[in-house]
Each structure stands twice: as C-alpha cells, then as structure tokens.
Length: 91
Image (tube, rainbow, N blue to C red; front, side):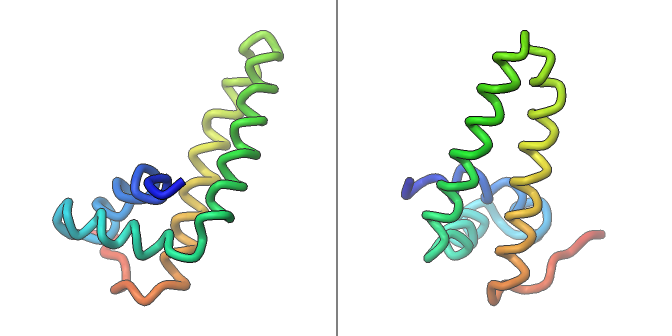
C-alpha cells in the first residue's frame, strides 16, 4: 500500500511532469500522501472488474483493460490538479 502510488503514478509523472526519474518518484509519493485509501479502493474495484472480465470467457478483458488504464489516468490527473505540483508540460 505504501509503494502503490509510486508504482502507478511515477511513469505518468515522468511523461507529463518533464522531470528526472528520482523527482518523478518523489512527486508520486507527494501525489499519494493522504490518498492511499482512495487509491487502494480504486485498485480493489478495478481488480474486481478484471476478475469479472476474466470470468466472461476472457472476452470481458478486452473492455476492462482499457477502462482500467483510463481510470488510473483520470485519478492521476485529478490528484495532480489538486496538488501543488508545477503545471504539466504537454509539448
């Protein structure tokens, strides 16, 4: 649970934040501070969705995998917007 924000948010922060890898890890910890239960809840719901998609003869995975990535990206952007990090560099 402690490393969950780093494993989820370090890569998007590296891309969007235009920073070094060590700075991306620090920013991922900053994004996850105080939000660990929320992140764990999202992960639990997404894991249940994945299991249900697998139970539907693996056809449901074609839907649940893209949804999972979109939910993690939406959570990352929502947490980043409410944090005090510098604005993203989309260039």
